[in-house]
Image (tube, rainbow, N blue to C red; front, side):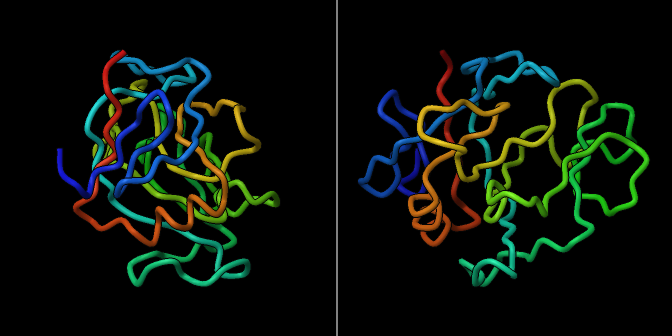
Length: 166
């Protein structure tokens, strides 16, 4: 492991000598991730991007990309663009990235099942804001908004999210 890595521990995420409370998927950690299982996949996941809402915040890094009104994320295994960012209108199942709530105001993208998504192996694993402390996600890693911003400002493109096997 590198000092630049974010490591999931029983006490939260460890990064640069600090522990940050977080939540993970309602299905816990798994080594056999499947679409819709609500689990967070074990592994070493590279950070491959960052998205932010420019109408709600300044860019947290110089490499963060703005989320536009038509930006979506394909989560439909039948979609040829499965597990990638797509634009509205989109005929397959997807998540809206520009949400009315603040959940995706800042999103750190990992390389889980990306760039060539294998249908059924689970779509994007993001690091994003939590709904509330202790509330599990659909498989992503989530935390308080202030902690997420601190994390986003400290990571680089060499940073990995390390999720140990259960």
